[in-house]
Length: 280
Image (tube, rainbow, N blue to C red):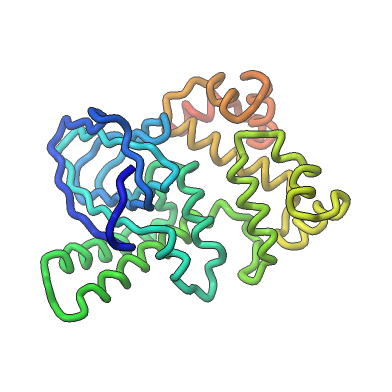
């Protein structure tokens, strides 16, 4: 597992086209890595899935991820690397549980930018970081840290769209831990039962539902279902997994069971038709 000597590191890397870095096996880091595509296109292989990348994409790899890049054309990357300790030291007035937010990216995969207004911001920050790499001026390190922190905040607010929309900035910390538990165990239905969650976090089983809705503005089961739907949509859009493989990954009995679940929450749209529509 690769590690760093500093808590934050910025690296420019140019990789020739038709290069596949799987020769020594998938890479596995002890730190977070944001990879911004300055130019080029190719495939990011992450945790067994293959996601296309192109110019302007920002991808976030967590310490849990195993990955490799296959470049289809000459590709320039700006790699921004940082340890969990750096996130813990960062103080934000409005972003709760930032480290937990960033870990969600391992489920999302591909470009994490969802807000169109953030693309030019990220491009400007990358340009500033590239300038810093080539200019050894006074306070250069301090500026670099500020630029990296800005990118981390932008990443967090894009990933945060998967949180309950009504969750407040002063939400009970235990709710954030419950959300973290759900997202960590989303592929294991037995650990998503209300009784299991209630026991894990010391909440009465009869009170858990009301407590979650009061804090988040939606029911616990609705949050779990919609989070699953979001991840399933990512599998359908970005991976070549067969539907029965997706069903197995998420703990459904079979393809039919998964399709029934998907249709219920997507106004009757089937998995196959949704995948065909999004790819077209």
